Length: 309
Image (cartoon, rainbow, N blue to C red; front, side, top):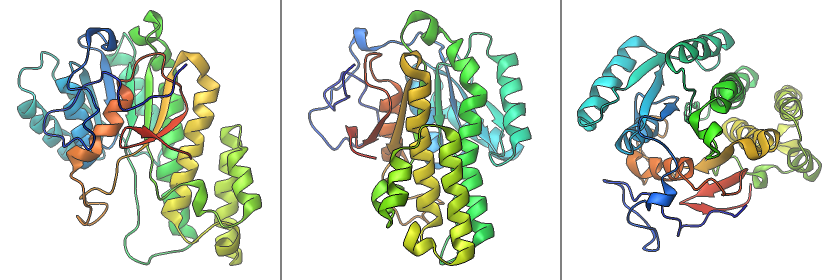
């Protein structure tokens, strides 16, 4: 397998400012591994980066299933996506998802099993959460972890059977999982060498979960600054990133799994202070979802370039 580089022939997306002139202007036929109407699921897609991911995938011929937390948000997103890609013969659909709730994740899986008889070819887990300002505490850390780490893992594992039953899987093209992580959640944020080593050596979801539990305990004991760091969001996103690597190892050659940093985008989560647009932020996640099948799994990408966890 090869490590992805910016020279691969994947689409340059309309309306997205590309930082490197080495990127291909369009997808070569050999790079287009997906069939027209292939199914893509994007979580947290009623606005921001998630919506732009859904739009870009629809433009590439995917049948898009997006998730939202309310019916009103879902209906609005579907209407805007339909207007954005009016020529698509595959109308988008929305599903309710409260990622922190295992019952909601299960309901999503059941609904997709009903509506997607040919499985799911692409899953982009974009849903995420961060407290604003200086809010910090055990309860807040638990909530942040429940959404960013645990919720992502629940969605990935519930939809794995659908991914492995997809046309991408049966054709050898490999289904795709892209988890939208963050440069704020890298190994470098962990101050304790011993704790950092535990993250690096994590082999299972249980290993990562134990680290998340220990972070909450460290907050309770006042040792989080020494053993971890002072960022609830950072630790939760590091858990998500390391879990992505764990999932890649577990699925092996059956899927192409990637972690991506979308950049600091102007969105509700950043109180619109970001320096990139949501469309710019969607570029690398969708690029990772469309990479050639022989690309190495378990990579972390930023601006279409691999970098260390």
